[in-house]
Length: 301
Figure 1 (spheres, rainbow, N blue to C red):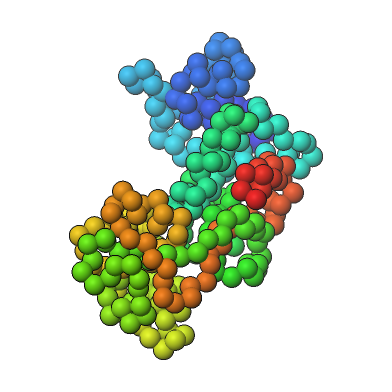
Figure 2: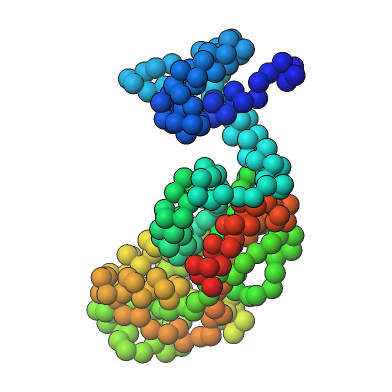
């Protein structure tokens, strides 16, 4: 198709209708009358020789052709915004920008409540789209997954190669046990730590966590009876069990009362973890992303 004969503004109409599945809502989001929006949609349908959207049960359902087109429009429009945004300011109060962020359940737990409350007041039209975290290196995630940011963590303060980053939260580790544990009450010795059975949190199925690494440096191993992917689910496995679970202190404090658990300091020196916000250097000068980073600094630092 010759783009010289195609009105690219029609892709904005397409994008909003695909998002809202309602002509009235899509038109309102673009500050257009419904008649003007419908006229533009008719032009796009004629140009592409496809109805694109069909009304089913009071909702505009995308045709197969529209679903295919949406895959490309969803990638193209953010790139155009990125290019145009370099030369203009970012008005958060009116922007409908969608920030795409990859995160684990724990980084979401620490990050999103405060951020979304803030955005609801300061940037009510902005959207946050959270995608599952990946075991890929941070740089590869940012390059391959069309992301604005990755929420991750590390146990040292050395910068990651090839990415920009901001450490926005640091904390220690605690060990949780059931209050009815027959052998562990108010203290946890190193010998008990080695003898008891453990739950290991491994987000991507890795065979060693930070606790295992510390023990290996000491010439020891632990007995892992259960391996689990979620920091937020793992504490719920402790009630009525004899397992030990070493996890971030912030989560441990919140779950210990409701779950009748005892929180103890681990008998080994586990390095503090640092929650990080990562972004690609190519987006470092983007006005929207710079605004986002400044909001994170103001809220958490």
